Length: 464
Image (cartoon, rainbow, N blue to C red):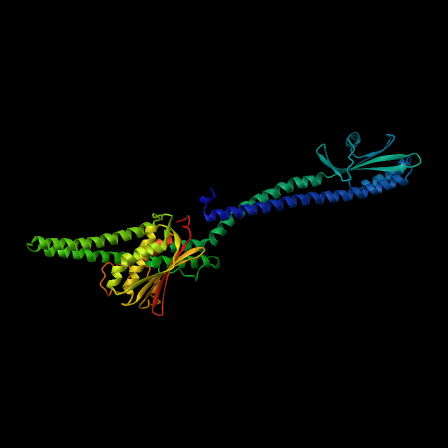
């Protein structure tokens, strides 16, 4: 349910909930404080009068009723609703001042016992009642039970009016704060809404234009900065995709034009069977080139969609390199290049894919190695990885070109040897195969030497 709420609604509800909790706590505090204030006042009043009355009982003679009445009159002054009951331990009623029925009920009821005053409702009034026992004749072990009840109906009436007003005010404040909080949140989120409108207006042609950071709040600058960096990556990817599409069209157009031209020339006049056969053979070569190109692009598309899963089999890399050398010996001899191998290693992966990757690197190295020099392929078996290096002498790759040689359909330079099969997909396929196996492929080119390094883990990661 919370996932369906907008950010504005979430923050507003959270603010309203926090305001409700705070105001409820404040209301409970004020209610407790008001009740405690009246209780403390009543306790002080009763404690003072009770202490004075108990002191008088200790000093007055039990039979001096006139003096006791005068003392009680003084104590009761200012409190017309006060009830004072004094009864001795031999059940003699010394005094009952105030509401007689309440006094008798207090005598008949259970002893209060608690030193704090008790709240007793009676006949529509509220009384704060305090009870004490005092010894009045030690010689005869005579004591008295003193009960004093203070009428606090005015205080209770005040609380009965004050507390509803307090809680009504708190409820109203919660509602007002909820509305004002929602408006404040809406105002606070207005930069985010404006940013959303700007983002919604970005088209494919505007990916290279970053969002301005001038009017963005400080809290959103990191987000906008990250979004601008994402736009930059998308723009570069979009440009590469556009270039890729353009390059594909260009690469496909050449063999198709060759096919059409050869067919048009052949059909322009009558030919004998030998000429038709030669044309068909030439067309077959062009169709093979188209098929090879299509297969490579389809393989890369499957890799992008994670539709290729390499097999996990033990590969003797030294034996695999020997087979590749046997295959490329003729090509190397044509270019006057020697092939050399060193080291041995074992890897786990898809043998056909690894062979294809090494084949691409070897053909690329042979093409750019000067005549009379050698291509070196080394195998190194480390505890956690296998490292394969293909090293060829020759012209260095410029530093600004080196990061792009693994891009699809990127031509490092025009093929001076006229190899029509070089369409710029070999290194891209090699990198895709290595990454499918959880490895890395990097290239360096310094001091007249170009080195391609493949690092493969001992086992294919489960994510592959």
